[in-house]
Length: 74
Image (cartoon, rainbow, N blue to C red; front, side):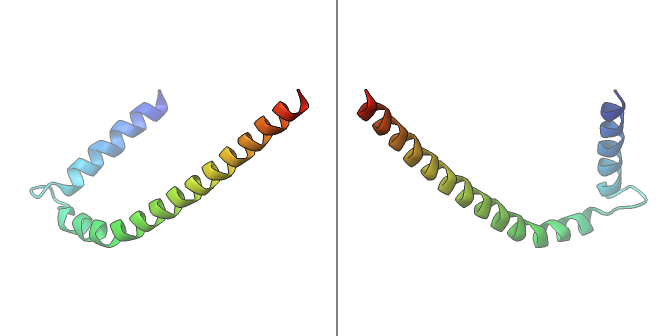
């Protein structure tokens, strides 16, 4: 329950802080941050996707090897 209330408070603050008519009016700053952060984020996501793909290939090879070993033993 506490997490839900804190989540609502943080979302409300975020919306309030980026509104142009609000006293903070951080909307332009948020856009500048996103412009700089998105290329870095996409690089990390790409790296993670490559690592997941390599692990998947390794798992498939290992499963195939185990199936062949099981068939050989029967």
